Length: 301
Image 1: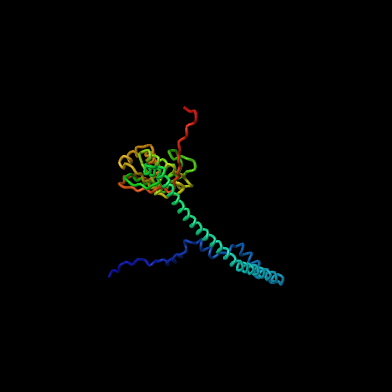
Image 2: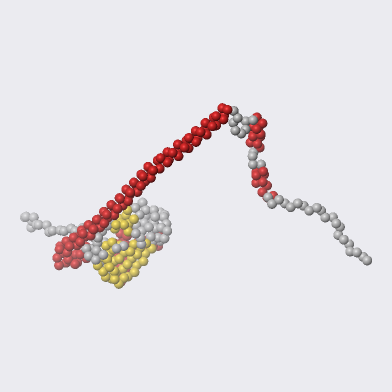
């Protein structure tokens, strides 16, 4: 019976598996030999000389004890001083809080008084305008902004660009002191309002603030003020007039084109739409001025 040939039995012994941390030999060496060789030799030499560890002489022990006592004394005195001054600081803090609260209440009272006096002055000014107007009292009150008005017109909403990107350059907004070209500025609102007046608006308001012939649009930092009252974007401009002709005339005007340039170049957003009924409040404060005819001089022809 022929047997099948067997493969030679020459297996080599199995190689030991590699260590899991074989790829981190540097870290393993650092962990196993954390102390530098020079420091290890110095430590061994000190141990051989008997100078390692705590001081052994009486003088050294007394010096160490004195140092520990001094450190403990400093810590104790600091803690005692902090504990002693804590009530004083808390009392001063509470006094400052009380002063701020009293000042806030006083400021609120003054603001209410100012608003009441402003309303009273405005009422008296409107009465004076009616008396000076005679038969034309209604027209005088309308033109001066002394009475609220309502009627058809347009609504123009202007808002800052998204993100309000900063940057310099030429164009209609180039001006020293204003680097953020994505923000609506006081001079922009001035041109918009003037453009509406020139396009046939009979009455204009911005965010509920009625504009008159004596209204001022100014800037305080980055804020826009109308008659010294700050406005918050978006700015809603209402104009009373012919809603069809007024909107078209404004868009075709120089100031309307200026607003379009702001939108195209700087991302300032605006929308113009006609409204069937817009209501504008009376001006919050008016300056009443009267004029009299000058008497002819004697001998003048």
